[in-house]
Image 1: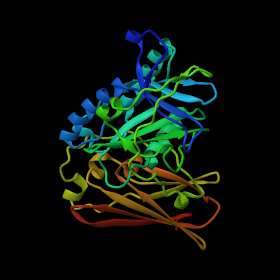
Image 2 (image 1 turned 120 degrees about the vertical axis):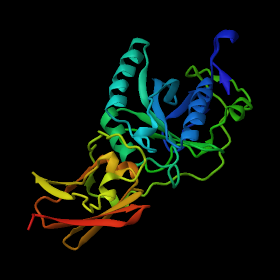
Image 3 (image 1 turned 180 degrees about the vertical axis):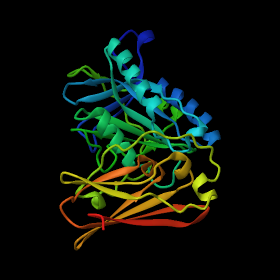
Image 4 (image 1 turned 60 degrees about the vertical axis):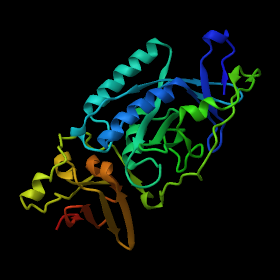
Length: 328
């Protein structure tokens, strides 16, 4: 860890990760670790995820660098459910954050969120769809942090508008004391970028299962989340077993959609969409946040396709529905 080549009392400190599975280095301003950790402590007690915007600059030079100078937390409440999935309020706030950042000669560099769902630190379909929509072809980053101690974290750096299948740097402990214990090193004079020793890396690289998504064009579905209290969903209490699975066609694309209302999906844990297209079969695994997206698109409007969706809930047996294209 090292300070910028300024007067000592003015020098900010950063933690730097050199390029590993990306051409970009990453720098995180050290005080931001405490800022994020404080919010993590609060939301961990509520058993919900939190997140926000990474703000900074893309620096050129021998090694291009994403320098994160600030973070803006996008608040949410328990009524929005445990999974962090930005809704209309958060997306409107994102535009305000971007305007403020531009006035300070900075830019939005991506998102961060905590991770309290089962499984490894990997971007979800909802993460990928949201980021690719909001940042399009620019370089951006996603920082994932385990919600509970010992907190590990990982950066995913995207180029050409798409997050990679594995972490851009291997997982590390998200702990301010660990970062402060790192020795300082000299700044790299050739580019003016301060080189810092890297945090100790504790676990093997992340991986992301993407083969099942070949041929699929995932788009951002409905982000409107109805308020959910965490009680048993109304549709189950009333005995309804309908997922409202639909397949509609437009040009060459099929839209596969289902009822994504947060009150109805509030207790759903996982789902599976199976697409049978002639001799081809594809399975798409859905987490709780993907279920709330409400739709995926599939390139197969000119063929006969059968779709089956199964949703798992802790209160009852799995729910399953099928639909065909063209409709019978």
